[in-house]
Amino acid sequence: MRIFQKGFNFGQDGPGNRLVYHLQGCNMRCIWCSNPEGMSFGGGTEYSPEEIEKECIRSKMMFFSGGGVTFTGGEATAQADDLLEVLRKLRNADIHTCIETNGTSTRLAELLEYIDYLIMDFKHYDSDTLKKYTGVGNEQIKKNFEMLCQSGRQAHIRIPLINGVNTGSPQGFAEYFSRYDTGNVVFEFLCYHEYGKDKWTEEYKMENGFVSKEKLQEFIAVFKEYGLKIVTT
Ligand code: SF4
Image 1 (cartoon, rainbow, N blue to C red):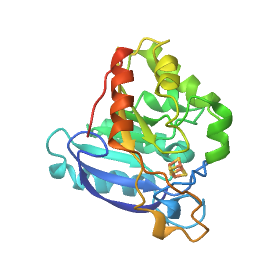
Image 2 (image 1 turned 90 degrees about the vertical axis):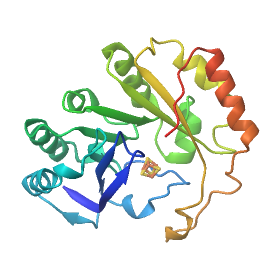
Image 3 (image 1 turned 135 degrees about the horizontal axis):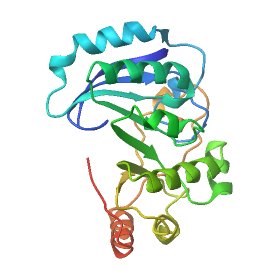
């Protein structure tokens, strides 16, 4: 498993205090990405599933407040074979697991069996627009969202709000989500920030991405109107 960063974090990458692994490589190319160093499939440091397992077991006493281990990226599911193996080991070790994913994996249902807490991005309801800004359409993301609704499993959907990219129509999101049974799903908005800007070695093409408080409030109001549950972390 190739990893470019790891460390503890409280409450932002799943419940409680967590050991967070950033896996190297992502299949998307979001122009606002705050971890551009994780996009390429080269680089990072290789760890065997056994090494990760041992490190997690050694860290068990740190997993307070319902914590555990989170795999994020880059894109965690892009290394699905290794991820599956590690998740199985952590399940056997009784360690709580979370993944943060961009939702594009065809293997999410398979992985889900060993994931205790799932966080999935949903960046746009319109496939062509998503493709324009990330290089990837949303067909598989929608399939995965629908699979999650049908499964009845807990799901935490994160929507990064980025001015000029996806803030034009809160109704477009809410209308799509509300077609499904979202009883098990919570939604979170993350407003655009520029923390990753200086890490880009290529040109940073994102301009004027900041979202106003009013825009965020508009999204919250529309989602509430459609009966969608909102969380903040
Ligand atoms: S999906 Fe996430 S990690 Fe991948 S390019 Fe987009 S923002 Fe970056």
